[in-house]
Image: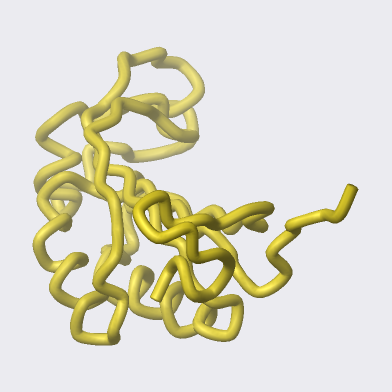
Length: 135
């Protein structure tokens, strides 16, 4: 059986602050990344939700004062946005740079970026495959 592994397509998944979604969408579109999907998610990272929604919306409040604050408190999950885009591997550095430039505040909770290989890409309507299906 012939493999349809797509060596030139990757999926970029980014978990970002909720209020950064519009700015992120506009910046990605400006760079030619128009096809994306956003999800509403909840999560927590190293800070375990410390600072709550106030810190999520205004990280400048800097409610986390030291590592003991992180280790000694177990908080719930914070609302975030997760975006997914399938792109050509050649465009990966540019897409990641856009995501970091828009979403980096330098405070806990700025998010994460994950890059995954795409094994198959097929447009349902036309049966186009590979790079043709994402362009």
